[in-house]
Image (tube, rainbow, N blue to C red; front, top):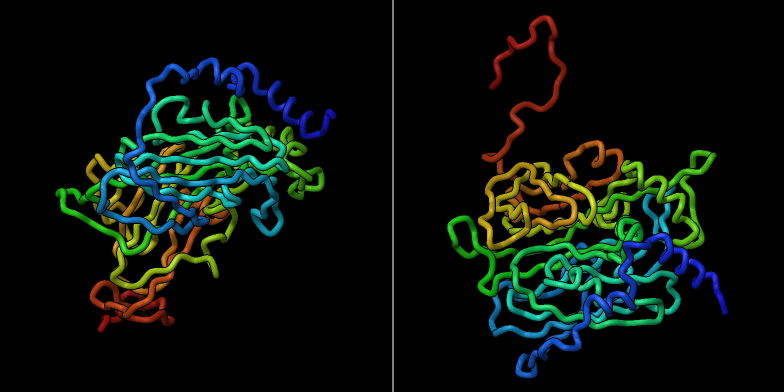
Length: 382
């Protein structure tokens, strides 16, 4: 029976032509049947359950064993998500969260991902790992229709933090990405992170901040439009996307996701690693009241980290990492320092830090009081 789902999928394939790599053409381009098999039977396997961001699954910072096959499972979920009080998006997600879960392995490990596209979904999907080598980052080998699954294995050869995202082909690529389909993977050096002098460094907490730019259309009444499914909103969303002006720029899927009850937490003296990913658009993370003690701005741990940065640059389509030890208690704002995007469009998070105030680092010498304008500046401070 020719269903609406089939019609939408067919329309998507036509719209993407001639750029879309379909399952059939992927087999033609990426015929791996003649490749020499790799015997990994001697390697141990470890299955890891992924967590929804900003949290990251438990992992060793320094590998205590040799390389292993690290098994992950992710389910693609198409669902409506609230972006703001008055705005909703028909999201496409990895595991139901925006961004998708962060994976952590060590250099030399093998990442083995089982990717499920449940039958209730409408769209074709895949996954492109920027950390992987060949086959469009695995995208050519993971293109799954609703009701299908695929298993991809790749060797983690480059240490750093990397973006992954859906890339089904042609105009479907940006649409799926700005509908929520991106995440991050971290490949740690086997002997852990090093500072600018080559000395080991570690972190007490790790948070994944995924930044998304959304392009939500407005109706004739000026209100944001709401759609029954992703296919229904495609043409209206595409019109907004092509203007390159986002309606929302948010952390972890919606305005305020990492503030209030969702705020990040730390304690005075703790060192936190912030992994910031942006699959589509440049960003400028800044920690108000803090700094980047060590920053791998390009996200690659073979490069020496920069020190004491006030703001760092995340290129669109990449992830970066910043390490900071909190010295003062209080509320810190982690923002995209395009302040229009931070304040007006939503790219703000809070970090609530407990501890005791240190007046040596900062002290309020005189609290705000009225002053005599006629004698401004003549009163000696204590």
